[in-house]
Image (cartoon, rainbow, N blue to C red; front, top):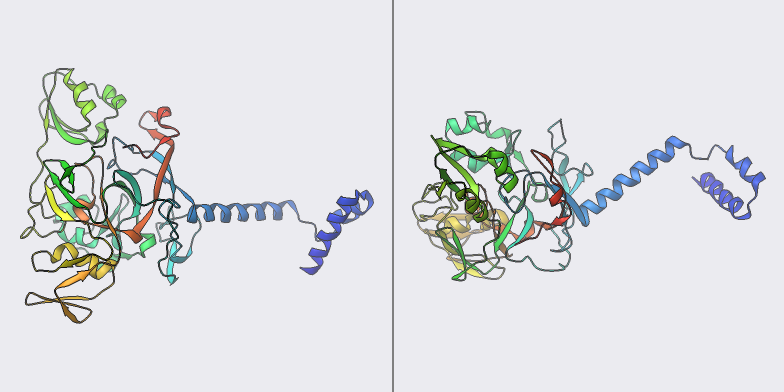
Length: 413
């Protein structure tokens, strides 16, 4: 290396003096970089520069599911800022650059869990706000079985019937040794709308969200499932132009269809002579958080009330409400919890209350009847937050590029 540094010094001096003779001599030096080496160094630098930007500043993200339609569509490519809510420093140290948690084609995990670093977040530019989309690590994505289409949490798998397991491409009987255990920062990325922040009283009454007993802002493009009926044929190509995801719709009977629709879609369909009614949803489902139908008779359209936990707030524990907080206490905040004869022991000490260590949030998709969100898996911890979507830089759909969506805001209400 000293000889190579000396060569570079001589080369700089010759260039400065415009000494053609010396430059010609130096061209023959064995320390002169060849084209192949220059390309390799350029590629290595580009990869590490891109990895640094992705890790600390801005990450590209693609919308994989319809849970945020019609605000964000399947095939939208976003830039997500990691600085707005505070840069979270890496926790998983050894990983393949530019990959999140899986190696394409191979399907293997793209990281090694140890060594690792503790959670730390730099100062935020702004706090997480109500009614704004945000990206976070899937809270229950720590113990998962991975299928070609998605990851499934172990608790979800345990609740499935054999036909549901087969439909989800999960082997039956299920062998839990096939689970993948992921660290916090390698859980799958989800994007939803933050509908409630720490300290809010949250409730859904007949599809309308209430925050602190006041009706919440309804996103302009929010969707629900509706039954469309009438004589005649629906023009699906026209519906695609309106932004309706016809591929996820289905025909329930003769001349009766079910689609996720916005209010604007409904009015357009009515002008074609069709009737539109709300599609009934199952009440009191065991899939609904906190998966305790004995104490919580909730559904996707009628949920709560409950208060979103805030750092420093204390809650009284009881057999009736422990299902709401068990995962917070044991998983997100790393305590042991035992329940004996109606009494609670946290880290071995008897108690009837718990004080939260961090803030939590409530996330919901704008496609309200086709979204797996906090209504199914509960609170989003602050340490799981990844960033704020900035803009849609590319969008592709069934009919090709959606030119009208390129360079549009990803933060619309």
